[in-house]
Image (cartoon, rainbow, N blue to C red; front, side, top):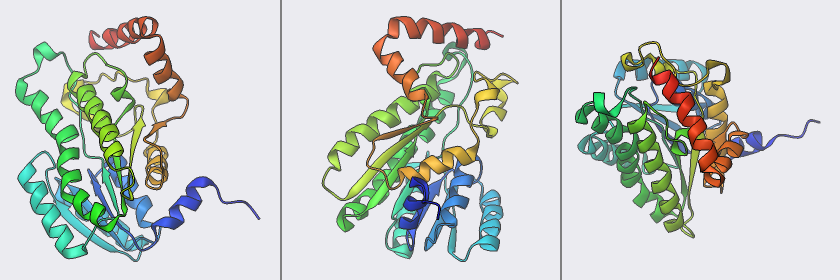
Length: 276
């Protein structure tokens, strides 16, 4: 008999749990929601701005799986909406076992050409959205001495990319926030893991600011399923960060070890695409 792999063993631990995914309407969030729904969980809570897209996903899940599905339209960049969402979800479900902070987007262009409002929009969604959602559910997790937070960052949390300053800064912030919080959670029974993928094949690059340009080589971009597998593994992991694919760990290590060699190379490659 074939020995179950690490991900298969981890998935069995989700039976009967309540899982909440932000940015669930498309891309990584949609795939994560589908994959969690197939693990015998009790409830999947789908959070994003687009109610129609969430309802489409809800229909897909209900056709395939016999679980409770909750659609909750919410803009995670708005603190008041997140606080209301947290209160209503906790009143309805009692608790959340797994929180996946996935919502995020990027705008491409030089800082000098972007407005403060554009930079704020990226920061509020990608970083403060993580903070807001974490805050509304963290207390109940600590009280129950159980739960796991999975924050989706990016390899861009370790590399500054020309044209993606606000995005990279927001992901740096997510990684720093997560590392500090994970230290605070030691011994509480609550876990926290960051998943940092390289470029992923989603609608991320469809934003008009990219204007057909893509700073990442599409040949090496990841499928959403690959990232989703990492998220499911992260939800039962004791590690702080899971980098996807694994070989990118070498690049991160080199960047921190010999930055005077790596940074000029990275700078040249991404500046060339920005100026194209």
